[in-house]
Length: 148
Image (cartoon, rainbow, N blue to C red; front, side):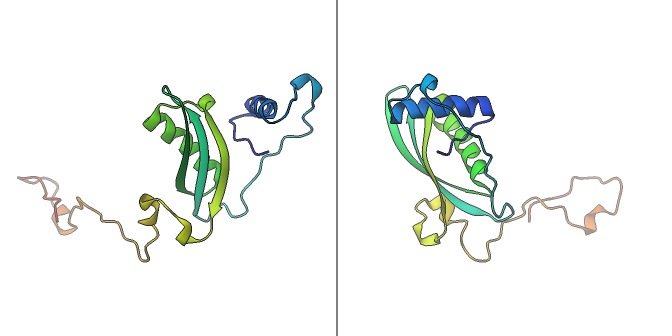
């Protein structure tokens, strides 16, 4: 079972919470053998992740699928928690991560805000650039125009 948590105490607590939901098992009748931190195989490659979650809001329980473009699985989950707190006011305790999948094939990406980043030769504009020739004087009578 993969559990995303900030430290080992929270990870153990979440493990027992999910085990009590899956099986008829209490903390007194079980034992955690080991906790392992799973590292990325290629932490310098940008990857696309699909995350299925279930969360409790003020009005009820909702299922959701979200996509993120991050360097690692844990970065994508951290961004999910920040995004859910900002957009839906959902806290860490009310979000249950069902599945985190790395999307290998770009045809499987569903969300348009991730699809727009997949175009070849993607360039971002650099607005408000100061021209190089106008920076010779120390003092000027008027401000430099930064609009191109």
